[in-house]
Amino acid sequence: MKKVCHITTVHKAIDGRIFYKECRSLVRQGYVVYVVGVWSKDEQRDGVHIVGLKEYSGRFKRFFNSFVAMRKALKTGASVMHLHDPELLLIGFLLKLSGKKVVFDSHENLYLQLSCETSVKQWVPRPFRRIFAFMYLLVEKLSVRFFDAWIYVADNPQNPHNFLSAYPRHVHKFYLVRNFPILSLIDNIPSLDIEKKKPIIIYVGGLNAGRGIYELIEAMHSVRTDATLLLIGQWEGEEYKKKCFDHMPHGKVEWKDWMPVEKLYGYIKKADVGIVTILPELNHMNTFAIKTFEYMACGLPVIMSDFPFWIHFFGSENAIFVNPSNSAGIAEKIDLLLQDKALAVRLGQNGRKRVEEELCWEKEQETLFRLYKKLLNED
Image (cartoon, rainbow, N blue to C red; front, side):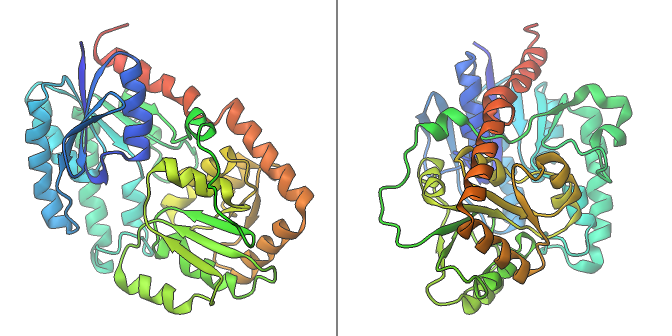
């Protein structure tokens, strides 16, 4: 049996992309799969062997935790080491030297984030962001050269740091594995059996300045329809959290912490509108937000940022677009979908159909399988 190990010191072991999509799919293909990730205990779930790691909030401690993760990963005896965080690039070289096949799964385009003056990576002081970006780019170049494969999640040709254009000699190492939803999982989860007194606008994801949460809360002050904005996710920074909570209109905004996808999809199905109005940073404008596809899979009409890449990809038949910095404009779009039921139903049905036909994990996983067969000489 071929053993493979996924490693993360940032994400929970049962992360949606890592565990539910990649690891469980590989188990069904007959691989013995381990995931070393943030979790309270070692256990086996859905055929995946979870090796728990202690969670650290500080990046300095998390960096050293990567060596703990490497030690645990090596104990599994896996032939392929699949890394999911930029902090793990260093141990990737060590794993490669130990004779392992190494894959890096780039969930985001970190170079673009660090290059942006308004980056959500606020742990990097603004005067040093370009220096950090340059240093990261050097590490990225070495990783692309020495690792066996590099997975990326979006393929916008206009991306200022497009991987295929940046590394023409190593195009054969790059695999596009987009973060599409698992349709079969979503369809097996019922809507939450709770009383809904008024329409729900739902946002799922990180709660930070770059995601436009404050602007979304500001919009709720102007929404004329009696509705609730439901935020689901983890706050990044106590100061920003307090700023948002202090500005929440009474009775119009609710927040719930991170939750497993089985429960999360129940909330999405209970909602009336999905929203993803993240702000125009370079990385945001050139990639996708997984939440968008999850809203569509659940049949919700979607309001999203008016990025040219998004408008081109989704089109007016799948969503309506708005300037994410314009809270008044966001409020108008919310009222439009809550009051024009025919439009909301049409957008929701179109989005669901497109997910069924092309934007689901059931189709996207084939690229992952092709990569693993190549790595383990199974072709």
